[in-house]
Length: 297
Image (tube, rainbow, N blue to C red; front, side, top):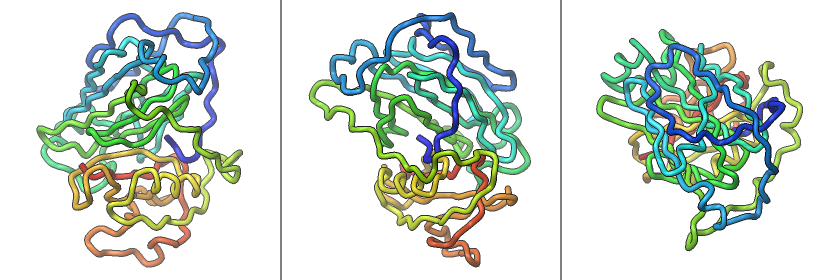
């Protein structure tokens, strides 16, 4: 979920569910069309719980080191392709998200970039010499779902957007995003997260100041996400092996406006710090380049 929600323009009609599985998505060099027929129906009540299990249960997106995306799970017929675009200079594409749908955006490699990335993790997200690809899907969850990355819970989502960066997957590795609905015996969906009025009406195309949040390795995902939201930062997730306890935040990478070669890490990595670029410092950010929350595997 981003901290600062982009303005998404709803279509004239809502999207119905697909009745066929979504096949393997290969190297996304061509645009994936999101062409669906019209449908009708009212939005379900946000308080509906386990009764919706039959409508949506689970769906999984698996990304390998060579750029392919596999969609699987009991509810894969609720997934519709929503396009693919290059993430040049790390800038996120503003995909449309119709009302009532969850937008899943997966950043990955295609073609030669996938081949090189599979030989070992690169030190930057993303590297400068290649444009990664963002492939998007619309998911008809009908209600709240919990998002897990590589088996670790991230957050609850409903009518929102979640971004996953899988450009740092090593050879033989796989990143897995799983969306699962509440089931009987499990805690139900939470109340909607509090909004931030100071973020309303901000220009998504204009650089702006942000204060680097204090982040400690091992902090809960929800706590760090709240701090990033407070700074109106768009957020994407990535998971890597690290020293923090699995499922907690390893670090946050904040890209600087006008400096595609610089990502400020909070906390710092390897004990190196940039002057004036520590927690509490004010930096100039480009809202089109999401901050990356790295979750330890």
